[in-house]
Length: 171
Image (cartoon, rainbow, N blue to C red; front, side, top):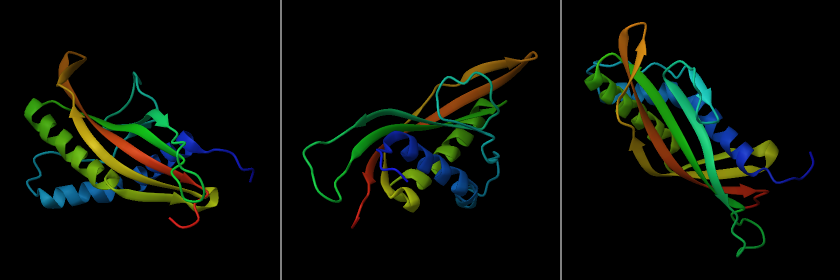
């Protein structure tokens, strides 16, 4: 394999694959912590790596890299090659605004446990990353009319800082 900077694409792919592989377990953990069963937390139906998708089925997960900084003050082995700012958002819908709020918070909780202070690696690419949640923003409720019926949508957006190492030797 040729040596070339991997940076944002493979970093994002690691995060998306981690979510896909573990979201069912994380949602089950949230349901176990809150056994009231007043809302459903089915696995996401759609995944996107860009924002602004117009047509999709909820729940949908969006994983978007916003920026990347390249520290230049460090040299040698095991220095951070890049620090990425990424947003992982989940959009959910329901017919009841109160239940939708609870459902959104439960998806946010599942994603938080998957993304906060997590090391991930891709050994064949010799890549390691470390994710850290910086904050969460919730959208207001908005209505999507579908054939005369009111459907509410809400989004939880998790802001991540990701430290990225390529070709690490002792991390």
